[in-house]
Length: 160
Image (cartoon, rainbow, N blue to C red; front, side):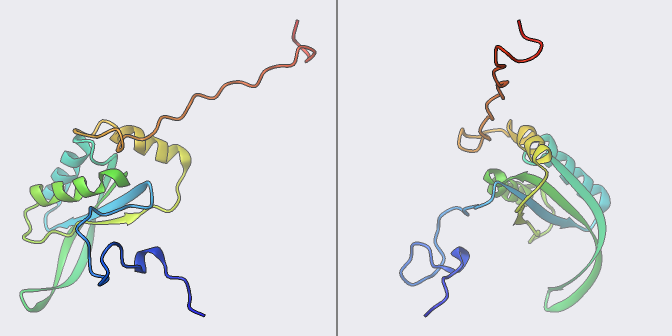
């Protein structure tokens, strides 16, 4: 008996199992998109621009040390990591915008799914990114119907 495949391990639409040309599908509603920059001021400017554009609700900028291959050699350099919180529906646009604004030849821009989170925080994240320019109705978070108070029985204390 074979083990069932994880959905991410299955080939999608191509019989040969190769990659497809469809946009990335995000099974989760929220993601953290990460990029890096060599300069703190540039990292902060990038974070600010993306939050102002409402492609992310917030960004965190912090110093890191990166070890990576570049130019045929292992590099070891200080960088600034930018973590951007957004809705999964905006992830591809956010990654593309990072590519447009970033100064690196090959900027890191990866999205990691948020599997759970504080409901109030995630609702805030949805609200702050709802007005992203060009957002389609499918990208706009569904509005939660207002809670209606339970009806009070006529014989409950304090009722007339």
